[in-house]
Image 1 (tube, helix red, strand yellow):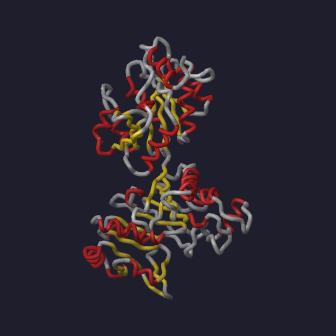
Image 2 (cartoon, rainbow, N blue to C red):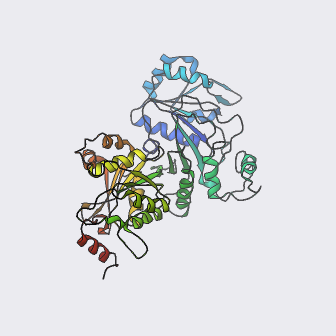
Image 3 (cartoon, rainbow, N blue to C red):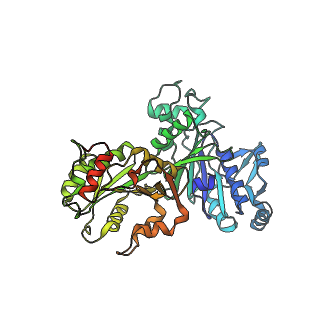
Length: 450
């Protein structure tokens, strides 16, 4: 995917790049990408860049030329670097208190800011005066390069390595490990220092290959970074390649719909035994845990106390649907969506009576979302849509606004152009348990029946 898609750039954004290992390349590539799409792009720095780097931009102009001249340059070049002065072979940008005036006077669609300096090193811990992020910033992109892995933790390989040593007690001269990179990136005093409260944060792990060992290392780092609820996503890729981003890892939740009354079953089906040691609901929760879903919320209704006891014992969240008797599936889904933490980017709708759900299918759905294949992702077996269905947060408000007689499929089908269907090799995505016959059949399919 491209950088605009990975970072969710919209017109009006003020984007600050911080950290080390690719800030200038990322800014340049994003600027060219947006300009080619017809955007008017301005860029600047709140620190300094080398004077010869000006040649990398289609056009550079001093702020002293004024708004009319800058607008004319944007008309001609689409992508313009704005600076204050050049001295001692360094280009200086405007002071941070000038940024608001710049936004009011210059008619660009987006402002890109190099807000940090790392001397070209792949990982950075800031000094007290760094980074310099304007308060108007709407998106901050902390960057680290995977080339730092295995490098010596010293000032020759890591910017301000001493700060990392002092904060975490890592040995001076030790080789940099994957979890260390994650710790730095998600640390409010290091990788996230100075980020404005209202700015969203999407980190970038640069110089990650499309496949192989380092791609796996990058994915591990991303999952560790996402333990900070301040970070909305972690992009993985190599910004100088034709397709710069391979995937964007985000925090994903699962809403387990377990509120039904099981009228056709004759007893509460989710509490029925699946194995000698687990009920159906426990089996489903276990598969979600094995798939490393970030947040699991079980929606209760009928026999809520018993379901809650089992769910909380397994360490997952529970919310009760007070309207379960009359509200159908929609009321439970609404209860689950409203209970999702703010940092969750998408939620999977999981049926509480689908015990053959498999971690590998869950991971296929989540990976398709990470790779940008769709904002709604559904498994498909022999051209039939199944569950779990993943739904991006942008569609939640439409679901929450549905009338009582509506259904989630009304929103899903409305956005059919956003759906990615993932072909799977198991019919488990299609079958749930509604009747005693279904129960026996599913156990037989799972190899548990007589």
